[in-house]
Length: 584
Image (cartoon, rainbow, N blue to C red; front, side, top):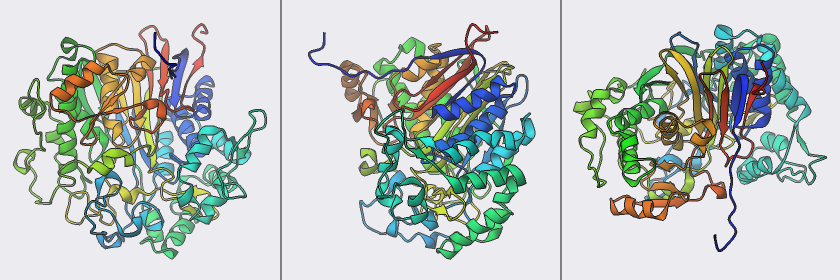
């Protein structure tokens, strides 16, 4: 027996029929599950959930951001709806002068910018894509109208969603910068300029967003282009320009979401469909291809040698990510090489079985890259970032599978917590800080340029067998997403775990120079990894500091029952079935 009491955090699995939704808030999951109950398909439910999440989880995502959605119907080719944030046409590296101070690195390990202008404020904003992307998905696969999909979001914006401790904490985390932007503070802070609180469950304070409700109604009535070519888009562009950001109305009017092929690999006999290009999906596929060179089942569940192999695979994939990923329409990006199983086999032969040796990115010659640009973060990220500046982020994820087996995996974001902190007056739209994803150092693949899409960390996933989807998964959490999703896929395939056990399993993270391990791993495992040369850091998820990504998973079993799981360390996260398991 322990000599002191121990607080344990867990979550029960959801099971049911008729389809299931997993999201990062209960209100968003409930909105999507209700669509499934009323006969809607997975895209209907996903779009409804995504719009609702933008209202009830505004610090993480919303119509002022962007994202990616993977969709696959049974026996159909998986595709991606791309609606990333893009730099305005007038963006230039000169808009983000560097401090030039050694050791003064910003989030993601980029060189620090004077006044943190790429982190918050008007110049940090990129053109948002969420409305265009969700509307495009609904147009192609949906069976309900855009107005129906928006209805729950409009309701919660008008009535206000109840504020409890998690909402209060999310506001308090960024209180200092939120106060700097009056239009944002007027929505999310109380009359005293403090985070709203609810002393009693029976009479909760409600966070109302009246301007956002009017904007959502305009989208429902006039269509998605009102945010781009109409009055709303024009008003946002004008306000950004008036405050020193290089925007014109054409930046909004010219934005288009698009449908592209999914990036696919095979892991443990399962087809893995995700997003490609300068995204987390490319890094995830490379990680899985490297892991495929080793038999994790033979190495054993969470043994030091299995974790060692995972860490090696993740580190090579991250090294290649920092060296080569960028907007593939602007820069030569070797996605075909990085996603090639033959390349993974070649790199895996460099791995020592019992020692962490130096692992570097592919050479320009091996990658087939001739642009001659310098790489970003050649040594990963500085210790200052490893110490915790990457925690949290401002991303949400949702997973849906409907009764007919159509699967959707959707990750969307404002980038960092509260995005730019800028709310366009009169619109209620909290805008992203997507420019922070660019490397502010000129002359690199992911450097700032007009109209360019920055490298992102999102990596939504659909798993299928023989063309039939059976799982949808993803996570929020910045760069932590990539290692998280790889381990979820391994848990679901190598170890045949159900959705919630796959999430509850302790994880590692290699997105910084430290190898982060959950405190739940045995002391003997930590000791063995350190002996192999890993610089191990232990993190306790119960402190809610976001040291590991925050996942959501839906799985369909062969007998037609769905199980769903959500991160136990993110309190509002919820998976909800359309019907109880005994209902037909």
